[in-house]
Length: 580
Image (cartoon, rainbow, N blue to C red):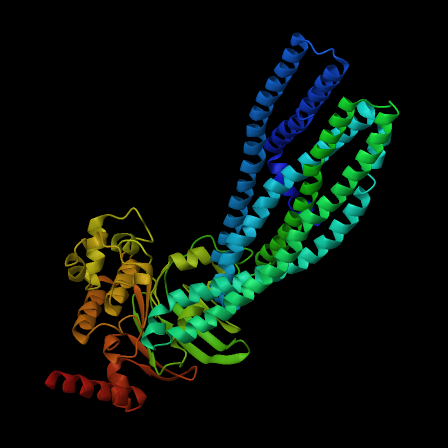
């Protein structure tokens, strides 16, 4: 079985625990042979009129001792086989999560969140069941079947044993055919579960939008279609699942019929005793579990194989952005240079002829219409993507020569779409360093002008803000996200349209704080409201991925281009709003 070879690294790593569990399970299988033998001996003694009190008491003692021994051994094998299987789930889940953290944005455009969650839950559970229940079924079925058949063959009747196992090869063939169908059906049901999981995640995340558009009924209809599809795929899989047990029982029933016919004949000829026949039938009944376990094992193997392939397919995906083979040992902030001849994203030109430099401690302003390339310019610095033609340099070195972790440790980034965790404000602000003091958190929130808002909340900095900061206003979320970046005092601070949800007065106060506290640090501000960048040492006006204007605020106003027209228009709007 390929799945066993694929998971052999885990079985080898946990071989001690598995060996203890398998040994305990094997002893249980052997001890299981004692009660039928004791029962057969007692029946023969009764039939022959030779049952005595000591013989009966010895029989009872054997039953009690075997029961106590099996109780303890069953506890051990469950702990050492089933318990150990959860370790596999832990390891694979960590590998998946670690892999997710290293992947570039293109990976998350290809795989939806709900799909990734399905891999990290349902698929890993299938692997865990294989490493636990699957191993148990394989060992118990083989040991119990082998020990029982040997005992039946050598201690009771080899003729009856051979007759009883005639249906078994046919059963193996039938279950193998059924297993292949189950494999295909389970793959389809897992894919349907991923779609369902993604639909639920997406619907819950966008519930406010759904309600605001009055789209609840259409959304329910859309969900029901996905839900129905998942149900149908699961029912298709279940159709094959439920056929295993009846199929096994059919062949076991044939064994019973053959055994009783042969046994009755041999009893009538005096070749076996009634007690031996009862013992033989009891042993045959003990074979029901191993044969049922074969079907159970086939099921687990097919499910585990599908899940392993799905997980392995994710882990095999390489990130578009990789660490260099020989990275620079250290990184220091310095002159920032953009020399991009061209950058294509998904074969479509996004940026072209981007050449400028920013000295350490200066502020860069990025302005332009939506879709002009401002955010792409920033994401290239973060190495969410790599430049196709050209380079970005920090302190004279191509940023691709640095480790990703080192590069990003230099940068504090506040994106357009802020993400806050469903914890307290305090934990969100000091997310980058949980050991920071409350005083440092308070200072950062003062710089971002959100301190007073927080203090007016009933629980202050311990206020729980809900998933994605659902309990906060847009401006509050932006300013808390800014606090999270500013508290680390990064060498390069990037604000990507991070002041759009605050009023002009608050924006002015934040900008003044930045000017005062970041005199020796590099700052990049992308904004639609030009008042956020008037103080910048260099302002770039972007349009269709090109720089159409550049300079300081005064120079750009004097040029009379897009910047001057937009600034004048925005100033008029502000004056009109003040008048109103």
